[in-house]
Image 1 (tube, rainbow, N blue to C red):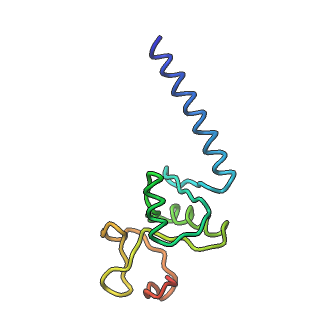
Image 2: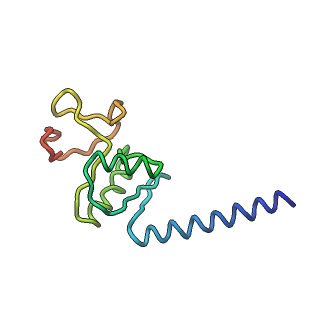
Image 3: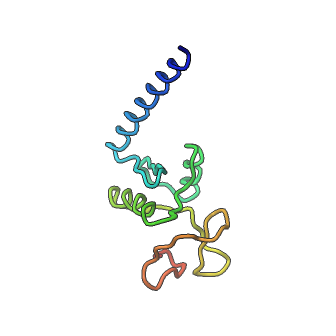
Length: 121
C-alpha cells in the first residue's frame, strides 16, 4: 500500500513539473537540449550578475558543449533579439578562451577569423 502511495505522489509530482515546464516554455523562459534545461528571465544584466543569478537558481551560466546546446542558447538570443553571456572567459593568452572552471573547451563555434578577443567571437 505504501509503495502504491509513493507511486501516486511521484506521478502527481511528475504531472505538476510537466505543467510548470509547459508554462515556462510557453513564456519562452526555458528550452531543453540533451536533458539539460536552459533558462532565462529575459532581463538584461552584466556578466557578473548573470553568473550570480544562475547560481541563485541552482544552476550555472550556460557553456555549450555541442551544437544542440549552442542552438538552445541561440533560441533565446533570437527570441529576445539580444546577445547571451556564456560561461567562457579569455585565457591569459589573447584570443584564446576557456570555460570559467579553467578546463579545455570541448566545443567551439566561432565566426570566421575568430576568436580575436575583441568581443565579436
